[in-house]
Image (cartoon, rainbow, N blue to C red; front, side, top):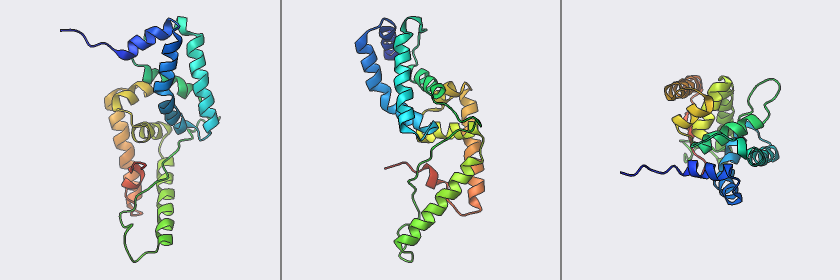
Length: 195
């Protein structure tokens, strides 16, 4: 039986060798997802784009000293996270989805204006509940639900085990759910995917 070839490993080898086409392929493959990932840590789109370009420039500049890598995505996520400067107070500027779904959206007793106002109030409650979580909890939730990374990928980015990631996400969701329960806000409002 032939061993499966790791595409990332081969691409990384080509990058280390200085192949221009390999850098182009890497950029095309990861630029969009890196932008989405970077947008978790900064609302400043220009900053995120600059950090991505700096990251690729550094890869080219230091290509000869790069160590072997068969998990390019995780490497790029970690490197980009380091490049995006955190505020001096150490708090993460995490961005949340503003699209929410109201289970009672089609009730004829409420006007569209009242529904919109209720959605905004619920979104504020959800943001407050999330803001009360630790930075680590917020980061894990964003990586899982906003970026859509697997528990394994999150574990590599946060340098913790997969089981620790699962526990962190579970406890974070439980904390938010308990806080929102008192306000009759469904947690699905936060985790409803953008359309």
